[in-house]
Length: 148
Length: 114
Image (cartoon, rainbow over all chains, first blue to last red; front, side):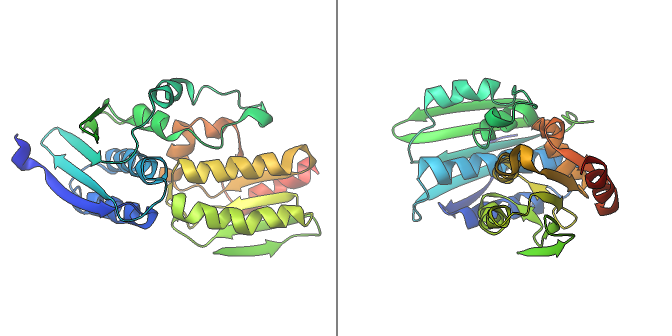
């Protein structure tokens, strides 16, 4: 496996483009188990939506570069953008975002679950910013269905 | 975006006519359903039979709806497709919402709690 095994798609920073990316991912992963595909699709949509809504504050006209490798035993994603990076606090907060009291109606979360869901379904999640470029990478083994 | 079947003066079955409840469509769901609650519909069945993908934006709108109805009414969700049921479970939302297999079961649950 090398970088040459990655397929690339550039999308614009619009919510409608997130669906296009999800469809593209499904098109290149037709050989993958449906549960693995569904969990990866959820993580991908959460990652891209986060960039559009928070990184670019829903302003169209900015690039998001998606690279996906559908390997023999795993799927790898690399998402790059040039918007505002995810704040360190938000990355930390996501650790406990799904540890809510289901009976505490007032304090149920209506947002902030995206990163937590990514971490829930993916085997590895890394995030870095260098020279104003944000790089989010995710890895999922094809035999690690989160929900059996 | 919605098919609405009113049951009585306070109750309705609401079925989004979309396959994906994501950031794009969940805003529209919010814009259409929240005013119904303002107009005294407080016993709702959300029928997700057409929906095969839900993300955290969609879940957030459903939680917002549950909060808006509050303790004065009911919200029951039914007809979860397997992938949608998985997202409810992954997000722990299966412990938040009352979930039924279909509309008839949801109506029976509403009647029991009326």
